[in-house]
Length: 105
Image (cartoon, rainbow, N blue to C red; front, top):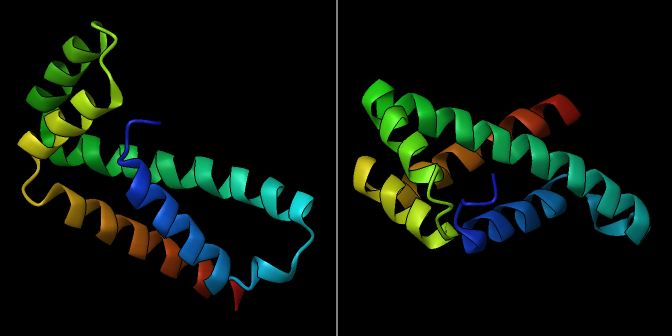
């Protein structure tokens, strides 16, 4: 799901790389792990957002997606459905990071 605010996504993934101690890995290995983590991270956010907006919101989302909207339009839609959307995404990212770092220990 590439529609999640790119700045939030990048900030969260950069912090995760640091928290997991991945900075010292060879770049190709780091890129491979980041791709896998990013996919899982975006999937988690998507699931949480879909749960939060409910069935009516999901129906509206499907209609919106039929129009091939720009990522900014999708972010605007989510922000209209979820109070403090950026904060919501940040919280999901923090929870995801905690799960990964706790599993890492």
